[in-house]
Length: 206
Image (cartoon, rainbow, N blue to C red):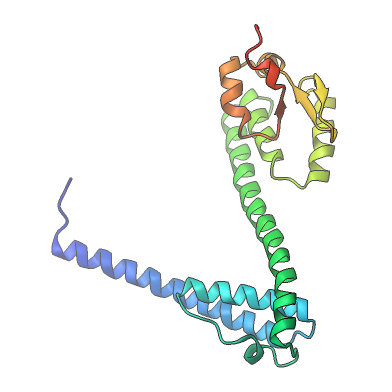
């Protein structure tokens, strides 16, 4: 490994410090915007939820937010009432955070679909597999419709059965034949997809 010179080390440290400063400025600007929006809220549930996001933003700076009552002049909550509302707001934030993560994962999955399409073509098995993976991050109602449409278009093999909630179940053999893969390849990839595999078919003689 090449040893960095003192000048290179100094340049690296300066670059890291600049990146950190830029990030801090961005977070502080975001906090000011969040606080401005919060000050105009009158609904306790909305206000507490917004306050939780502000606390999270301050946490990125290793700092503590001002008290709730100092940031929300239009909402008056005693501690007991605040704690009660916070329980509901926290539960809602968990759902919103999950949706936000799913949106990020979906964008990454679609990027892989586009890259695979450009490399292998839209009708390729590689593209079909990436599309099957991307379906996992769609809302459940959209996922159900797309799964049905995929079967109609022949993008997925016929299901061997259905789960109690109506999700199609496929055998390893059917997936392997449909995608032109070995059973071992199917099992390596199926964990990244929304496909439900018949567990009894995994070790079944092919």
